Image (cartoon, rainbow, N blue to C red; front, top):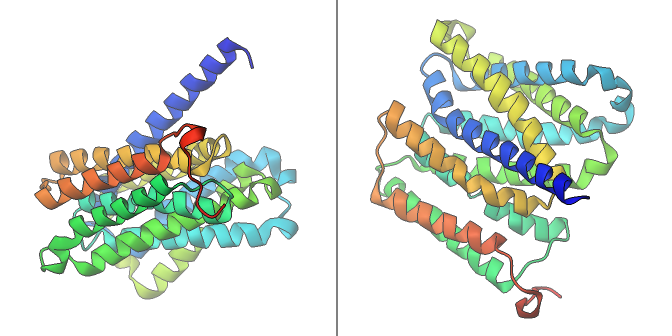
Amino acid sequence: MTESEAARSRKQTIFYLSFLILIWGINWPLSKYALKFSPPLIFAGIRTLIGGTLLAVIALPRWRKLRLRETWPYYLASAFLSIVFYYGFQTVGLQYMPAGLFSAIVFLQPVLLGLFAWLWLGEKMYARKMFGLLIGFSGVAAMSIGGLEGGISFIGILLALATALSWALGTVYIKRQAAKVDMLWMTAMQILIGGIVMTVYGSAVESWSDIRWTEAFLLDTLFISIFVIALGWLVYFKLLGSGEASKVGSFTFLIPVVSIICSVVFLNEHITLNLLIGMALIVSSILLVNARTKASHIRVIGK
């Protein structure tokens, strides 16, 4: 690769990361707002179904690469890990907690991703990374103190942690199977299947008559479906395919910062001392997990 090509590649990566951080940061307060108009599971199903359908249409010119008979188990497993569990836990959990705090706990995901990438993707684990993981869990504990004292829902905290866990497992699974599937079809099918599952299940346990089809709700849902889900996941997997999972994950700690700022400005949520301490610990954790270390000073765990 020439120097000019490398520069263009870096600029493209910066653009994709900036887009992802902004769009996924905005997603949390937007999703919280939408829950004023719709039951959680039906809303989760609607937005993923629209996003998955859009991606499937985009992928149609590559239909020969779908190879559904061979690849359907990968699509199904990925759909449950990355979409059904992730958006299911997320959408229900947002009912119990402020959007900013919920997103902050969910973005322990890069730390979990660093651990899982070591266990299942063969990425290296150092003593510094292990220390970083402990710092990250300390950050979650700091933010959770209010919940344990009754100020914040303990159920919400558990759902936020479950959201982070499902996302991390889904990312590692997709990274492991990347060579076996077309990534555009993988992205489209997992979201489409996940949308169908959540819409059907949501329809069984919730009522469509409870939805208030206001202009605000429709615009909110379409924005999330198109930009957050369809384009957001497409950009995320593009970045994931071009580097180590843990390196991509290291930049996502900026997403809850955007989410918290938007939640404070538009939803009148409050920043607490516990939240600031927890965020500082989680950011420190992620930096420790993903910081570069000179080879001569590396102590590799398990080698």
